Image (tube, protein in one colour):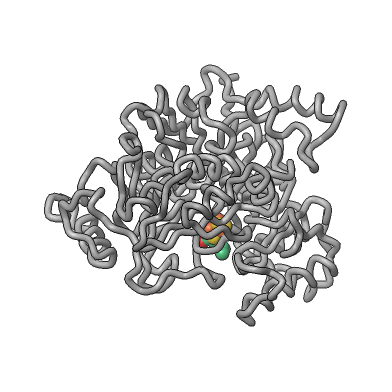
Length: 467
Ligand SMILES: CC(C)[C@H](C(=O)O)[C@@H](O)C(=O)O
Ligand code: SF4
């Protein structure tokens, strides 16, 4: 028998039943739930008189609508307040573990899963949220689902799926100093396009991927969805095991040892075939800055804003013209000439402790430009606590950054953290669609290091050559 890929191994070990046409009933090990996509799912259960099949397999947290300022004041926006209250009521009624808004363990759903040891290698993990792909960093098969599927998983712990194809994205070599996982994934999306991964589950391989920390792998897998992929994954290794060891919800003692032995089998066999392979060299990746209104509209910081007139394909040209108009940018303008108004360091892409340590190291002893408003939003209450124990909050505050409570925040502006029309933001998040951070707001996706440098200089700079 030909070897199997990592994806094949996880998929096959979760098949409950497969039809000849490929339609498969898949067992789902774990589900994460947040306040935005769960209300109708719980409502559906109520209407049908059903209870969750395995409540302990689900973990819930409010993240999109929570305020990032003083929580003792409650939530000013009535819609946000209602969504969070509804989640609390549903979790109580259906006996699902909830990390409430004032729980230190609260945070962005994709930050807390790994942080708690809920996310484990070899498992199937779903959430009514597209960036569930983040959890693939642990060698899990993790993907976003719709609200009716959230209900289906709650009721049955299974999901009907079509088997996706597999794509290997191999990045070998060594990243330039100060380039990060964020630059790698933005460069990948720039290369294969936002539909390049459609129909595939991506496995990231190669020496540059192995060299990434778990935080870096999460950043990478997080944005797989922006490449159109169903999921992204990295095979577990010693770093994965070390990260999980001792986490509150991870297996302990003899169970942990047994789990590790199973996790060590979770790799693509020599000779296993992927349906597609893409290769890139880490040395070729410069710090990336998105210039348009999709994550694929991205280039190196040492480049210029592209000129739509040079684009042969009419659809691409039109999209670029429209994007430049929305973004208020001129063709051929050096990326480093783009000045910014706001900086957002946060989101499930880049708000873990390693991101904040790195950002603080660049911010230390410097001052945010007078023309810029900058904020740091930790990914979870525990990340915030850890950062404060290390004094990172002081470094940020000294430099003129606001230091906030954990949540999605300005990543999609469902709470009070919103860009004003025309405002331009350097953001460590994952989406730069029109209006994503507020109506008329302009988003440039960058790494944490690039965001800090932009905050301090007031415009983009090449972090490789920055003080
Ligand atoms: C609100 C939620 C459904 C949405 C998603 O699925 O990704 C959000 O998290 C986002 O990042 O746009
Ligand atoms: S941080 Fe942003 S991308 Fe992540 S779940 Fe929240 S809104 Fe979605």
